[in-house]
Length: 437
Ligand code: GDP
Ligand code: IMO
Ligand code: MG
Image 1 (cartoon, rainbow, N blue to C red):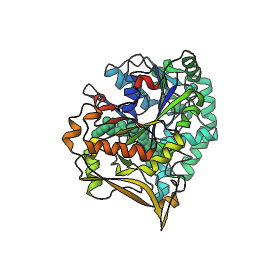
Image 2 (cartoon, rainbow, N blue to C red; image 1 turned 45 degrees about the vertical axis):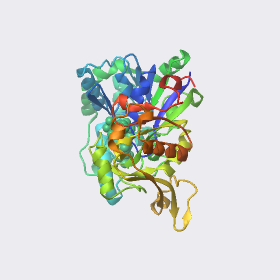
Image 3 (cartoon, protein in one colour; image 1 turned 180 degrees about the horizontal axis):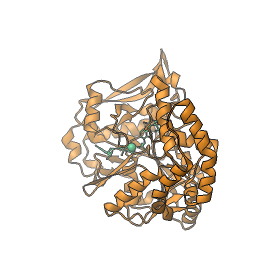
Image 4 (cartoon, rainbow, N blue to C red; image 1 turned 120 degrees about the vertical axis):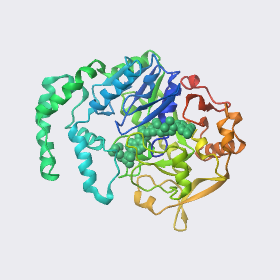
């Protein structure tokens, strides 16, 4: 039984949550392996919309174990709110498990995120302001607090007594900001510890038990390939490893356990925050995509930058993630254009690049996208479709071209946010079969 990873192919918000929700109908466990409350995953079914920042989207599927693994950074207050909101909606969260090794986002991480952004001035990253970067920085500097610490009062105090003076020195002397006390942080944590304690455990051991039992495991990627700390468009990236490799680092599950990696692609490309975006549309076409696609951030409400699909970046994503298939969504949003464009490559000066300049943001800055034009498709055609075959011919031609440029098969397409608006492609393995390939 092979594990399946779902990853975003570009700069996030590709609809990973929705695909995870669909695949979860066939899975035994879903694991989020990285990131924190910077993520916003939306799932819509039975007329209700659910927005997840920390909890895996799979929690909506009864009987599925939903693991928040080692690689995550967790804001315990946001998590408690998310649990309470789900319970209020009648969702059973008893399958939730939180890694004792996941790092805790504390109030000073959020403060530092904000102060560091302000200090960057024009060079700001446009972070989500959730304290994610400073928390990962503390993890790497080995001055982090882990979820296991918050249920061990003696250890929590001992760690905070070492760490708080360091943080206060920075807050006070670098940013002239308010400081924290150990007792104050412990008091704030005590408000949520009781709610979270039952879920905190050794999730590596749990994941290994699940593997031994032959369970069907799904990894829910957060953020996306171009935001990867190492391989993304640094420094305009997040601080974790959203790529498929992150699934093993963030969970303790070995790479050999993974058999399928599905890339979630939008029929166009979006980006939130700063950084070069070669296919960005700064005219009414970008506005049209934003309004039709409701392209406003789930986490921050910021308008997302919109542009034509960057298939050159997609090709790179296929390589670094080892994609075995893709989901192409939001075909309904592109409907109504007479013509649509796809970026097939970049030029710099007179020269064509032979590969995506990953990690070299200065090189990327000077690139011009090369576009190919395809005929558009009508709105009624996608709205009324109930299967892939019923899609307008031009929409299917678009899917075929994206597949060709990516070099991997499209497994699913979507024409709307609902579960029933996602169609499997003919000859593609079913969601259930994906776990046994
Ligand atoms: P994620 O972060 O990758 O999980 O994606 P988000 O949830 O942040 O953003 C995707 C948005 O698109 C959500 O509001 C979804 O409900 C919505 N969505 C998903 N698939 C489709 C689709 O095919 N068409 C349209 N119009 N919206 C979709
Ligand atoms: P999902 O999982 C889109 C972006 C931020 C910013 C950069 C760094 O919903 O796809 P951070 O707060 O992580 O330090 O911000 O990364 N970013 C996302 N953009 N979707 C996300 O998550 C993102 N998570 C982080 O906008 O540019
Ligand atoms: Mg999102």
